[in-house]
Length: 97
Image: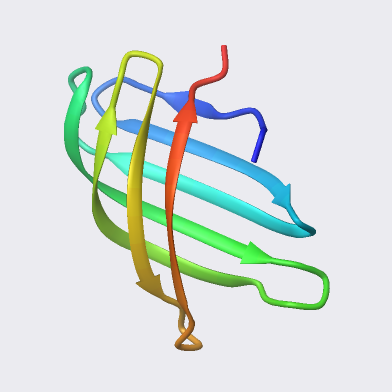
């Protein structure tokens, strides 16, 4: 998805983005506590996928490891929605200016 990515840094790191892929609205939020610069961190990711006829399906507070660089980051996740569907994927992002 090609969209604006918000990255707030300080003592914590928060990435958030939303966009449309093949007619599905996808949102993702990544949270990292005790952030102190580029590196690998324990992270919590929330992802939702949905359309006007399907969903939304969401996975919340999935623990994973994120790799953060000076300009963005990446991670992989797997989780189950409350309806029992599995959402899995990889996210890579570059923070928008």
